[in-house]
Image (cartoon, rainbow, N blue to C red; front, side, top):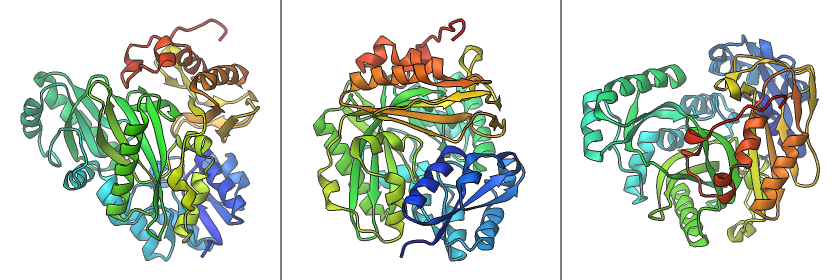
Length: 454
């Protein structure tokens, strides 16, 4: 049964993206917004919009009672959580079900199994999926963690079990720094996820971050939508993504896809999800890192190389759609790159740059896509993530895609605030990036050069 009305429990560009998918499916939409988001485009373009609280996300976008009340008030029959906020909250999935609302995401049991990083590692171990060497589960104390770190050998990384977006992570290079890093990771995890659980893994010095997008329906069909390269990261947060990865050969691509499909089938996964791997190019081995049980920021690059609408089909999968068989023979079509555009000042250690956009011109042309919620006159609030746009290009080859993105960024004008556009342009022009021989440490040594009047 197709839904009549979907409430979107999110904001910004992803809320707008979901609204567009719903319009194509002739489904009514409800936007929720905090008081500082009243003039955001997602509140304007939804069929209905309802304020759910103040700017503080804990009292609005993270408030389960407020969101459920909004769904009941507007007679919505499903809730799409987008990414971030409550998208991987098992309790939210359960509350939706208890209130006879379809949660467009996996069941709470699967979120708990795969969304919790430590539990997911244990599950992969039982399925004989290669995992990064590390603790067998949650590490309860700094002293226990230090013993494990000695066994693994430094450097190690401490990770929040409920983590994501680089929060609750600390790299430790020597024993003397372990206790402080452990406590800092726990504290950060408590603030970000209300969960102090952490685990410890071996830290690879120059790995690649490769991920596989999967989609599953309610009839037992699971398909890989191929891979993405997400190794350009700053403080564990992705900056630029591309698909397919130029770092792996077709044999490795097939192995990663087959394992990802097997994982989804074994846990009974429904909808869209992403399985992330660490790839060691020296040994040509890959290791399971985690699964994101939601749509991801970088999903557009996969859509560009597959011509498959991930968000629309995510909704249809949960409504009982049978996925098309042609997905079993999917091959990448050209190359796609996505640049995340943040309201930040790269010259001042990426200081957030909220404020009013005084002038705006976004690019266009063949193979160019812009996902954004901003407009001239829009005031970017200081309360949320600084990403304000995603610019995506598609071309017949990686080299052409790089050239196209550089041209597109030259055409992009966002005035009144600082953005990361000049930073992205320097990444794209860097010889290491152009060669494809870069790792997740690429930006650790990358030097941004401020150019006058840029």
